[in-house]
Image 1 (cartoon, helix red, strand yellow):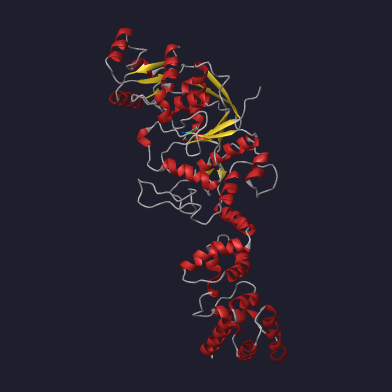
Image 2 (spheres, rainbow, N blue to C red):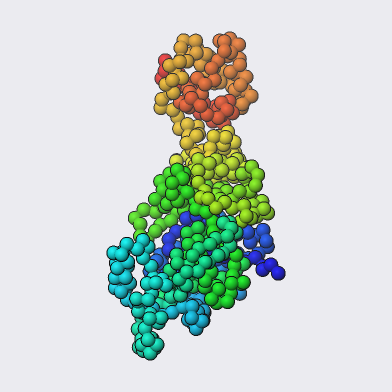
Length: 505
Ligand code: GLU
C-alpha cells in the first residue's frame, strides 16, 4: 500500500531562510497539497554552535508571508508528533536509542579521539597526499575507538565519563545504491563515504542521525531537500539499512541548486542585484540588514510563482500560476536535476503581472501611504484614477511615484529635447490660445479638454500633445494626456500652463 503523503521542511535555525530554502518548503507544500497529505515544519537545531538568534522566528514568519503554511510544526500548532524542535525531542532519549541500536548491531562505534588527535590525523594524511582526508574504514584503524581499543579499556573509558562520539561504521568497499525521484538511480562506493559522527560528545545527535530518526518517527513518506545533501545520502541509506528500516525510509528527492543570473554559482546572500531573502533579515552577526522580497515590493503570490518555476517544469508554456493551480499538477518527476538560473528581470515581470491583476482601488490603497510619505495626500477617487492611468508602466507599487510624481510636483524644467524641437512661434501661439480656452472651461473632464484642444486646432492648425504634456509636467512621456489633465484639475493645469508660458516667453 502507498504510504500517506507526509513531507517535512526541516531547516536549521542557522540564519535567515533564503529563497532556496523557501523553494524547498514550497515544493514540499505543493506535493502535500496535491496528495491531500501533511506538511510538517521541523526545526533541526542540534548544532548549537551554529544557532542564530531570531532565525526560527524568521522562518515561521517567512512561510506565513508566502502563504505556505505547514499543518503541523513549530509556529503552526502541535500535531501528534510534538515537539518539533530536535533539541526538545532529544530529552525523550529517542536519538540515543537508535544510536545504541546501531552500536549493538555492530554498525556504529565509540570514538574517543580528541580534537588534537583528529587534527594530527588530518595533517598526516595531507602529508601523505591523501586528497580528502577522512575518518573511514582505513584511517579508523589507527585511531582511538571501540574498534581498536581492547574491550575492557573501552568499558573503563565509558565508565569514567571520558568524552566520546558515536560514529557510523561504513564498510570499506561496498556499492551503495539508492533511488532519487529527481535523479534516478545513484550508485556510490562506500570508500567515498566517511564514518559520520551520529551522536556528538554533548549527547546531541548530528543531522545525519536526527533527521533519520525523526523521518521514521514522524512517518515521513518523502524527504525533499537541497542538492547539498546528496553526498550524505549514501551514509543515510546505510543507517536505514543497519536499523532494518530500509523499506520504511522516505523516498528521496534532492532539488537542484538555484544559480545566480550568470549561471556560474549558486546565489549568495551577498548578492546585490536582487533580494535573496523573502523578508528583510537582520543577522545578528552582520552590521546591515538584508532587504527582502516583501520590502522590495514583491507580492507573495508573485514570489511563490517565481520560485515554483525555478527547477519545476509544469509541462506547458503557462507561467502564471496560483498556488492551487500549481498544486493540482505538481510532481517531482517534472523537477530538473540541473541548476535553475535565476533571472531578476523576469522576477520583476512576474510581479508586474500580479500587480495588473489588482483592482485600481487596491492599488490606490497600497499607494496612499507611499504618497503620504512623499508629502502629498489625495482623496480615494483621485488615487484610484491615478492608479488606473499610471499602472501600465509600473512593476511595483512604489513605482507609481517614479512614474507619476510630476502629477503632484510642478515642473522645474522642461524636457530639453522636446523643447528644442517643438517650441517655436507657431506652437507658442497654439499654447497661448489653448490656455485661454482651458481657462474658460466650465466643466472640466477628458471630453471638454479634448474638445478645447480641437477647437484651438480649428483656428491655429494641428496642435502638439507632447509639447502640451511637457509644458504641464516637464516630462516627455506619461499616461494618457487628456485623462491625466482631467485628473489634475482645472486650477492645477491652468496654473502650470500659465506659469510655463510666462517662464518660456
Ligand atoms: N536541517 C537540514 C538543513 O538545513 C535539512 C535537510 C533535510 O531536509 O533533510 O538544511
